[in-house]
Length: 276
Image (cartoon, rainbow, N blue to C red; front, side, top):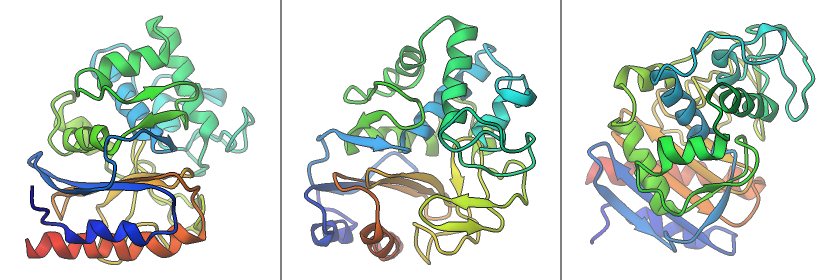
């Protein structure tokens, strides 16, 4: 196919050994791709949106309720999804009362995984596979370890997921709308890699761009843009105003190179989409 997003080829200039990227429109059509899109990469925290989607499927199936206790100090499923449980970043230590601070927490997503496994009697990785990966045909995606960071996938598979989020079949669209809407608005916090953000807005498992600066998306990204990036040099954003999503996976850890490269890349992708 002829790509309507020629700027995807600019990943060739990123200082990484290997990179792959793609853009999928809200109608599910592939606008363009570049690089080894069938190669598996560690996702790091891009695992979280996949895990969150599985939790939301469990909610719609009636296995859990978003406001039931699931973590320490009475924190709920909703608190854990929105990084407001009060749990520390990477340890099961309470740093704040639920709903009072935005503390980005791998431990919170691990508590979510444990809670879902307990109430369904299904290991979280199996639940994720049955609820999300298998129905979407994400045959190259696996979770071996923490639901916060231990997923591995391909651009091809994440395109399927990004298409699903834009036009949900596994979830009621109203549930996805809630996931991409600010939960516990006004809370401040630290966005890993980018410092203190006021406010530090999140939905349910997805980070929301709003007016954050600095940020890993672009200057042209709409405030409604939501998604996630990972410390393995990966990202997935969905821009409802652009009616498109972009996935990029690399094999170099996140760092100054990504802070410099990703925003102009996103702006170029959005410019291509507007002119196509």
